[in-house]
Structures are given as structure tokens and as C-alpha cells.
Image (cartoon, rainbow, N blue to C red; front, side, top):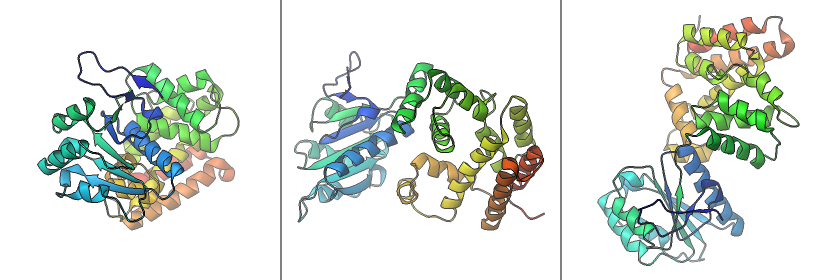
Length: 340
């Protein structure tokens, strides 16, 4: 178990764990602004607990909408004494009732219960954080700081491939980080795409085939511009990417990744966390898809999917001009699927 020393001068006596080596504890405090890492850590806790006992009961609390007595009710022993995982979001927006009752809970945490507290930053709830860090409740802290250093991002991408049991050369990892240096979520998505779409070792040549010249222009940037209804920008970015050596096939794949997620979320109701669990996504993907769906109709989305399927076939050999196929797809999507 990786344990990091507390920051100099901080009143922290509990273990601080790396996000990818988190272990369950009576109280797990997940702090820091990097939402992707926080979600990974919380999911890992759930998977470890469920592997130990499939009867695990999982409950969620929004600390910003907390109802008095909610924590005590969820933590109370059940008839069959199943282990419990209570995940609390928005602790940085917690109500006074939540703060008071959780401080009291720390004095005697429930047996066979793991309480996960997600705090994204800010001073709200500081009294609770200080109490946990001082040892109340027997907890641990997972610090999900923003990954700013290139070396940290390289370590992250390398871990993505190890988790998928795929070998990636150091040069391939560095090239991928260079292409997606500004967005950790898109870096993770690019790693998943390479794992899904390629066979064998992931080499620098593989990354170059998918993402060559994308340090400044990525397939996702082209897709973002088109989905947002900016055809001129999308076409310009596409031509720049192709001139830099990008291939049409992974560009269509980037569009497909975003449009598929939008289609899943179209018309769906519920919180980001609930929809993420329902559709097998992460909450940041839900939030992004909801933003992307603004201005779209169901009919427009259907026409965009048809254009995407046609472009996919064209760039994979069914047509003679893959660039024209890309341009036509971008035109349809940038118009949000509006009928001609």
C-alpha cells in the first residue's frame, strides 16, 4: 500500500494513499480537483468491497442536499448484516446538518461500513476534513491533485495500458501524452481507443498512425467544433490534422465515441452519478455529453448517426475519397443533423 507523507506543516496523521492504490477503511476522504482520478479511486473501493462480499449494499448521499438523519439511517445495521458502502458527493457544499452529523459519526463509525467522502476543494467542510486528518474515525485520505507534470501524465497513461494488459513502448506513451497534454479525460479516452482498436504492442508507430500531428490538433478537437455547430473551424482543424499526417479512420472513431455517448444520454433524466452508473460511463462523460446535446433534436441526432455510419464505411474502403466523406460527415454534424 503506497502511503505518502503528509504535507509539511499540515495537521495530518492518517495515511495518504495514491489514487490507484486505494484501500477500504472505515472513512475514506477523497480530496483534490482531478475528478477523473477521484472517480477511479472511488470505483476501486467499490470493486474491492464487492469482490470481498457480493452482497455489498451501496448508497449515495449528496452532501449539498442532505436530509437530517440520512447518514445514520444508511449506516444502521440491516437485518442480514450486509457490508455497506456509503458514497458522499459534494462535501465541499455540505449542509450544516451533514457537517454536524458526520462529525458525530466519526466518534463511532458503524461496523462493516465504509464511508467515502468526496471533497473537491474549498473551505466549506474544513472542520470535518481536519477531524478526519487528525485521526477521528480511523480514516485514510486519497489526494487527487491535478496532474500538471509531464512525468505524472506519462505514469498515468502507462498505468492505463498496464491495467488493460497491453504493452506500450515508452516512446508510444510519450507521444500520446504530447497529443493530449491538456486534458486528462481525453488522454484516458485515447488510451482506451488504442486498446480497443489495435492488436499487439502499442508502439510509437501505432500512436503516430492514429494521432500524428495532434499535439495542437486532435481528432477530439475536430469533433468538438463540429458538434458545437462550428463547421468552418471543424473543417479547418480537420484539414490541418490530415496535412500533419492524421488518418481519417481514427478521426471518425473520435466522432463515434462522442456521438454514441450523446445518443445514450439523449432524453435521459437523473443526476450525473446516477446516469453514469446506468449507462456504464463516468460522471464527467455525462456532464460533457449533456453540454454537447444542447441545441440538438432527436431527429438531428439520428441523421448524424447515419452520416457517421456512412463516413465510417467510406474511410474504411467503401468509397474512393475519404476526405470528402469526412467533410460531408462534418457538415451534417455541424448542422446538428438539420434536414437539408
